[in-house]
Picture 1: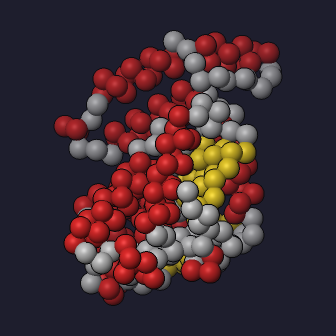
Picture 2: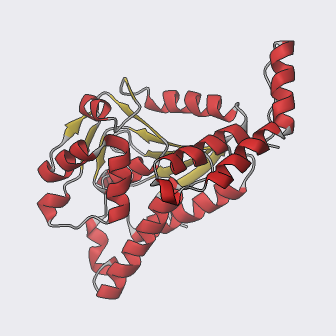
Length: 261
């Protein structure tokens, strides 16, 4: 485990913090591995109902790869392949995570940071946040999976603008594109995300989980959709004790106590 990734559980919220503020939370291989392990722990922990990803220091979410580590981590063809496989696995794991994932974006969100944010379910940023994917300024290739996720979020035209120009975009630009859900005052992003996460965590986990899966299927080509699993998840909601609890709580005008079963 590295001290460059901080994890903690606050009630129903599992937090993963990229902790390299002196480098705007640039990410090394060991950091990606630590995130991978943290996601596995949170997926297996029934007490964790929502995960929040954030960057330490208040100046950046994640600013991409830690270039200072390239000599040690990406010096050979094999090392580059290992690095790329690891990052791709983490991105996929975040995107397919069975519980809601919120990107808490303070300040800069650049390169791999934008790719990571796109994998999350909800993105909240501060008014001063800035976004960029400078791949075209560096001659980097971008794999299909990452571009597919971006296109599903902002559409093909904005995806092309982001990559073709490699420009830096403001929080308002990002909101207009659909890259972020909410823009809040700087300094209030953590409180906003925590409040949202707690609201989500108070809702029925089976309903939330089923919606996450079904929305994921909805953006796939029709031939690739698992409609049977979608139907099974919906049936699971109606067959659950939580459905009974939700009805009773509504009739009794009280807050429901959902257990995810």
